[in-house]
Image 1 (cartoon, rainbow, N blue to C red):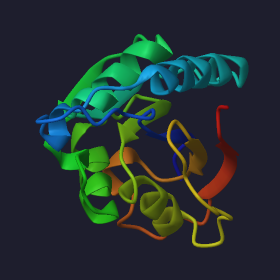
Image 2: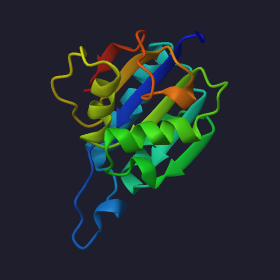
Image 3: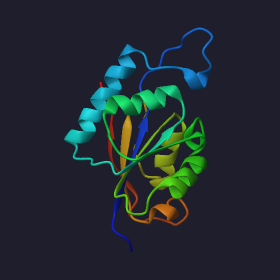
Image 4: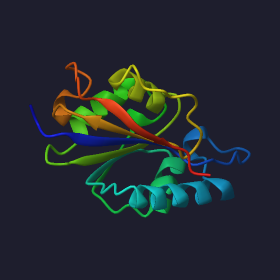
Length: 162
């Protein structure tokens, strides 16, 4: 068995709805910028040292990541833009360096909470508001996440920055 890993699944901050702007290009609003910065502070206070990031290509996810001030190698991919848990798990298997100990995925609802529940079906997730992040322990290699039964996968924390 491989050494435990940490997966952090973060929903983007609250976004605005400017007229005439395609969903993909919607920016964060003032509240979303504050939420994302607070989430970054909380992750640091929680001792989460992010080694790699997978981020949706949407503007609001990019701005969320920027506001967290997390500085780690990042892959931007459509694979987590408004996609299913299966798509997100495939992105994790495909884009995560094997030596990463802690991975952050910045994406959208409902894909991220669905991913957490696929990995730990006993997880208590009642809502997943903007800027929420779930912290999961993962016991399999990144290239096997979601493929093998992972008896060590469990939700360790669900944080809602407010």
